[in-house]
Length: 231
Ligand code: DC
Image (cartoon, rainbow, N blue to C red):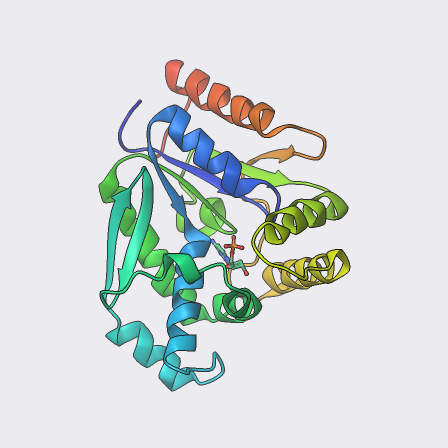
């Protein structure tokens, strides 16, 4: 496996991206990056500092002043923000509610994008997100876009959240997922879209293993036949 490839996996919430990307990275023996974690990390920091996403000057102050330190643990990129590890709180209800607003701020996107590009120092990467193949690494030759029917995505997200929190309602989860889709795909800066040249995989009715296999085989066969360029 070359050590300078970026495998970009994009798609809407609960399309199976995280599980699939993690496993693809493990099978290929490369580092996994969840780009959404950086948006969640910033949201966590804003909540911590009592900054509302609409307060442009305070948002910029956090972007300029906070110190981010990236490291690889268990094959996954993690980070500390001003020396603190927010990992356990990135999936809290408070962060979940605010993160799409934070991710819509152009300066936030530039900040995250710069950090994501810097992660190439860790070698080949599998990076999942919404704009990895379209904006962060448009030159990548390995782009995949995972999708699934909204009902199926809501069921997946419901199972995931119900395992962690009590008093979860399916209809609420579905509604919040659809709202987030709407925000992510209509924001003016880097909206969720199918990147040019991406292979679209509709995962409805597919097992995780089937999707992982599809991607790993495609990557390996193209590396084997050197059918890629531009990285
Ligand atoms: O994948 P996730 O649910 O952790 O993403 C959290 C939020 O961040 C979600 O609103 C989409 C946004 N996001 C983004 O805009 N661009 C990315 N590359 C990754 C996530």
